Image (cartoon, rainbow, N blue to C red; front, side, top):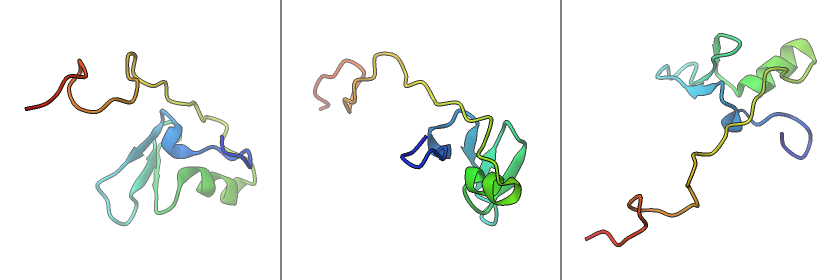
Length: 75
């Protein structure tokens, strides 16, 4: 959730990006695609914040390094 309390779909496990240029954002939990952020659509149509938001868990061992999995130099 962001500072206002509204869920950030990009951080949700249900969020995905579609190949449809008209409706590029999707929510697997609610089963729809949208032209705008799914959480904003849910709020604008129902007046209630998204109830299925679940924060993604970062992959294990990912400490923000780039490159190879062992952190070595790439030739």
